[in-house]
Image (cartoon, rainbow, N blue to C red; front, side, top):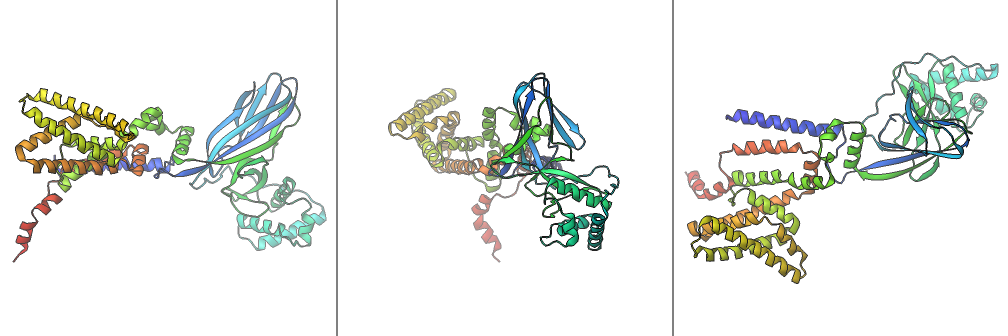
Length: 512
């Protein structure tokens, strides 16, 4: 196959891998760093009312895609009540119903949400019509007209007009007109309704929005009225007390409109208390939960859909191709000689359980003792297959002896020696013995040392926390590993070890 085809295939693999990874990071919020954490708010609304003994029905407004947040989960807690959730314009309603209820009734609505790092979508709805100006007495109307004329002279559009109006109305030292207008408490529902009437006089559509300020460990929170104005394109939110434009990070939009928050049929009016707390969750868990909540199909075919026990197995298996790539680079580019390709990778996997230093000691000890016993078997002139079976038996016996000695010496790390790939050890001993006989101890030591170096480097790569996280969360990176393996596989130039080997000839060639 031509090099161009290899490059095209590798490029396609890189593009597919990068596209899947980009989608998961930008759309699903999958983190690139394993220790990345996200704040998760748990908000609970508690409804209490007295039922009259007959049929009872409770209608309660609940958030519907609040801007600036991603809803992860929601629960409805009630006893013997039927439940339905229905859209109500821009809002959403939860409706509980029961055939008979008497006495104190308690209903709960709980949800989990996390801040959305992406820019919130504009709150666009069909443009409302121009509002009708409310009627006032002559004195009040004159004060409002004077205020609006002054505000209009110091503003350029709807947003600046509203901000200027709120600044003047909230002035701690109001003039005579503002003192006449402000007859209700700042920030109250009545005051916001009055503000909507003033804006209606200026022919600006406005509406009330109830928000919940998020504060950690609050048990008796209440909704706060805000105001939104329409600028012919979208609704723009304002804090009626501070005049700040836009929803802050800790503001949860609960509902839009001035209808009653909760409506009770078959009982007395209800009281509503809001409780909230802030928790810290792993970004991976948050992204997974949000993806399932939003019905993202990619999560149904991800490793997160597997049982936890199987996931733990794949956390190790997915690192094997990366370890193999390390061996390919060491052999084809560096020129490091090893006993095969997979033996250093499997030994590196065993080092995960024994730790690096203990693994090196155990591996060196087992191979050294096994070689001595293999030399004894050579004098018996056994055939190949029986000899390999004998070496395998000796390796297992050595492992058992090593474990027993470790127990007697209270060294728990020695028990992990049973995880060594015994077949690979047996083949390593056999191959080292053959190399000793055919090329001498120098070449055998060279291959053994190269295998150990490759296993150590593979261990360091395969146990890297960041790489382990990336390959489990983004298994499509294996396509990139495949592409790199194909590119390295077509390399036919000098290896670094060969440059060192022929350094003398290179010096002679440079001489005049």
